[in-house]
Amino acid sequence: MSASGGAPPPAARIERPAPTIRVRHLSHRFGALDVLRDVSFDVGPGEIFGFIGPNGAGKTTTIRVMATLLEPMAGRVEIDGVDVTIDPAAVRRSIGYMPDHAGVYDRITVREYLEFFADAFRVPSLDVVDAVLELTDLGKIQDRIVATMSKGMKQRLQLGRILLHDPKVLILDEPASDLDPRARIEIRDLLLELRSLGKTIFLSSHILTELSDVCTSIGILERGRLVVAGPIGEIAARLEALRAAQAHGHAPPRHAAAPGAHPAEARHAPAHGLGEPAAVGPQQAEGPPPGYGPYPPHAAGPGQAPAYPGLSPLSRRKVKVRVLGDPEAAAYLLRGGPGITDIEIVAGAVHVGYVGNDVKIAEIVQHLVRSGIGVIGVEPERNELERIFLEVTQGEVQ
Image (cartoon, rainbow, N blue to C red; front, side, top):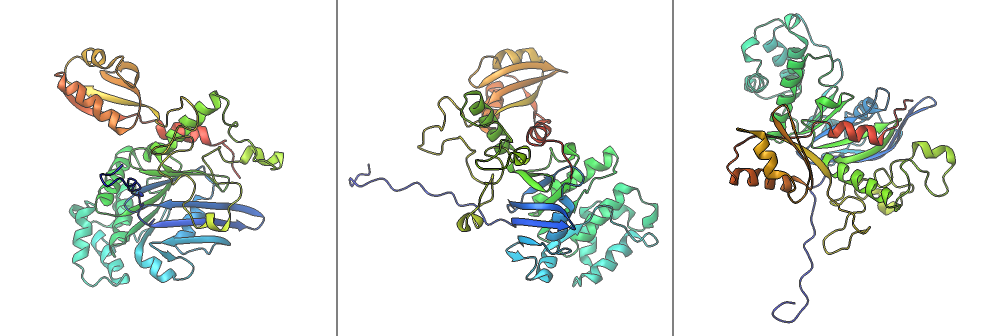
């Protein structure tokens, strides 16, 4: 109650920024083959969104629609608020698109290549070429003939090309395919730097290890259907909540058919609480896509009771902590602490299993530092994305 005796003001509603990429009910087919089936997702500003799926899942078709190279048969795609079919020229000005296995002009120098495309993009000043050379670390080889460059350097050059007109959104189809380990690391670091400059990055891949370190959100596509989309941590939390609910008999098995669905549809139905609703009404069609809410399914919002008794909305995770000195001392300090599920020392690092979110990681580090243990590295479990992918997909191709 307030001092005046009135009711307390309602809690402020959390407003999400408008998505930079908005896909609603996208469908496409080639002949009799449905390559995309009612796909919906959002990509927020400043995100690195990983579009994951096996070869033939429909990733490149989705990207070609987003890049205005293909008109969808059904659905709507907006880039920075502009419909790709209504004003494709405006969309092209706001995106930088790098296709898979894009060719380059081999018999010119790196600088000549970038200057040519700067002219094609009608960039007002060629000073931007120097800025791109510096950003992509190609300045030291700017006079080299393109044909003599490695695949990794050519990929950097392709990224430089799409940055010349300073696009707001980067759309990259398999940007690290066929690269050696060093080149993959360099491309990853460049993507992180581009995100720090405010770019929104959409990249597709079927190699999970190249995405787990950079992506803030993911979408998983299988047989042309979106299985799940959203921040990796929220997806993991929803899966954890789903497993707990199933253990208590509160949720149907994954891939169970919706009520009234034909039995043949059961194997391809989305995971309960993870995919799209079976039916979408007019109002739902304009709302957030599946997996875009602040709370995972089965988790309680502020002031609400949990949907299932004893079910925590927080995910069980693991973090690798590297410390100065004896890791056994760090393990002793953490073992049995609140929210700590297991402790293991592997290759000199302390692997800590815990229930919680990033706040719990901060508490772990703070506890060790206050106890005189020097923390030199904190690294989340790297196989989280692989675990999610294996859990929500069936390994089927079209």
